[in-house]
Image (cartoon, rainbow, N blue to C red; front, side, top):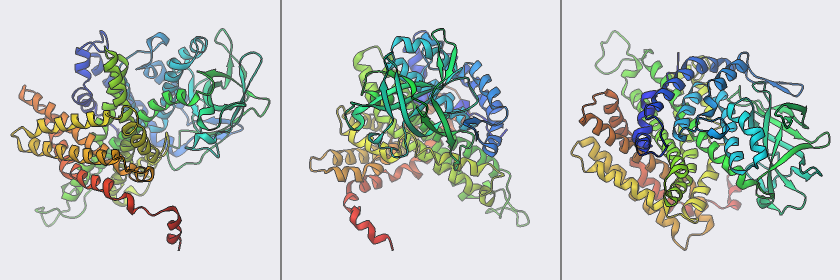
Length: 598
């Protein structure tokens, strides 16, 4: 078995960073048994390691296959999906009213990390189905909910998010798919969509597409988009499947990675119009779709964490068995395991620390979503909602980049064997490379963070959050233990650097061009500061556990990981702040780019 779910590390991150245990004790999630998360995590980890991980390599080799409008997944995948759904894994945090368990988003996030580590291609389908449930539960009328949510929650049907078109990638204002209202109150959709994940497959009997389209009298731009539910098969009033709808898969993409996840092109209305139902109000589709996209962006960030974890596990196992060269102090007549070489250990520790920091950021974002839903006062819910909004682009971008960087380092540890397919290290990198691109490119996430979350209404949450990070650093810096004290100093330095960069953004003389030019380094600075702060928070909790008599080695390991992240990575925060403050005028203008063409 080449993936073992790090259940203990995940559970500690949920409790010590994301505050799950404290929230359960405080009644945030009603009468939920505080022992239940441990059982859920153990079983989810077992399913990941024993059932999903073994199909990952074959799924990558065989991939999804397209013929005559249908998509077939690798042998055994339909049975695997059925077992996954029947075990209830699709329902973890979904509404009990429609058959869900209603458990914390944090717990669902941790489970999704493990399933994605085991087989990213498999996990992508459920991500979209669960996001669609969120969108329909919040925006659809009662009739649509009653007809579709029980099947979607149970995983008997799956769902997609159909936004992208050949001329409209990130620019949704360019969407051309049309919707015309029929006499019976339904709509007829015509148009094309591309890059639609799991839009056709043989895992479930029906697929529900949530489609952005434009009415004839709609205003231009994104303000004229409406959201429609368009099922593959029409559904009768009694819930039975009827005729095939006028939506067809026209092909799948031959991709760099995630080969067993079908990325489809769809044609709507080639034979008169695909029947759809309006979700929410006309011309308010983008707001409805953002409900789905927010969950998808959280889980996309988690994909980066998941790939990083598996890449680290593979690299560590290889470094403990591969002999090459002679380490300092080794007998002259024998080669050493490469893990004995300091540079290899530094690389492995970089992989481990980056993964831990990314996990902490993602779980903190999930905790904010939980509190936005369940906090007792409206004021607390609003504050948590703002924090969730702030951390979502940070999670999506920084965690996805972590996945790519750690997977690349994993190839480096394997050396030449990493560049061939036999070890699986290359697959980790190929799978990871999509994550910074889809669900809104990381450049878009950076723009969202700067222009909407920091500088937009309610942007004071940025300073409130940075102050909380600084408080964590001050608490660690006040402890005599050298590693914790130095860790705390770095957290404070990073928070100060982020404060300076944020103040620069807020200066009234800043032009839009300057803000957009430095959005990406600012997001990276925010991610590093958040990561080192959350790892310091975990280190303080680890120290408290040890002082209480818990001598599990994992607590010393968490302190060491936080210290390494601080000294090897987060010390760069002041330099990143300087990049934000000083580099805007170093960016060449559009007209000067032709100078580089030669």
